[in-house]
Image (cartoon, protein in one colour):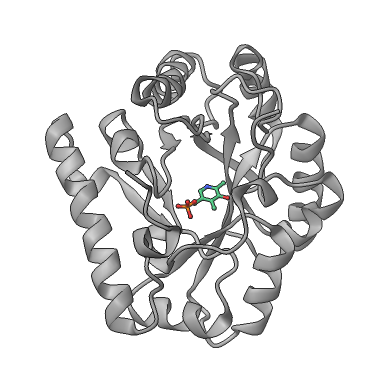
Length: 257
Ligand SMILES: *Cc1c(COP(=O)(O)O)cnc(C)c1O
């Protein structure tokens, strides 16, 4: 048995109809996973991830109904936002690691940032957001796979980090984000998702008053159905909607050491 090439697994969406049917297919799988887990399908938000996708295809996705897109790299997201002023109600979520010196870009345009993992970054974002007169929904990224090379806070540092976020007026903390380990072993992948859910359940109890910890952003094209079964409230799906990417995942986040 050979694995099918990525192109076959994730065909490229090239028309509005392609986007509509792919979005419907993913939503249907989310609904089925919710049903298996005894959850209401309306409690899961699908965040389509448009990294590497050009302006023309983003426009098609918009016409197919997308109003919220995720991007890993802030510069790419910022450029797309600037070049699509006509899509005024399209909102952007930055889901990848952010260097402190790029906080100013996020503060200018993003509606959501899912990779908060340091106090320095929180401070930089708060300062830039105040200057812009904006606020930002944020998710704290947690390293649930234990891989030294992955971004995100170690689970044991998360509780004190959450407490320290109480004083940032422009950061609206919503919950947690994680990338599961990339593994064929379903139990290992589920273990990452469960760790995040347990952490949320535990920390929710003594979260500061202005810090909400309800959201769990977990699951991508390869594992979102499992993530939904394990409690995801946001799934970040790129390739299963837009098509396979040419760039390897290691370009976006560090893989195995
Ligand atoms: C690209 C990306 C995704 C989506 O991955 P797909 O394999 O395209 O579904 C999810 N989360 C993050 C942080 C990403 O960078």
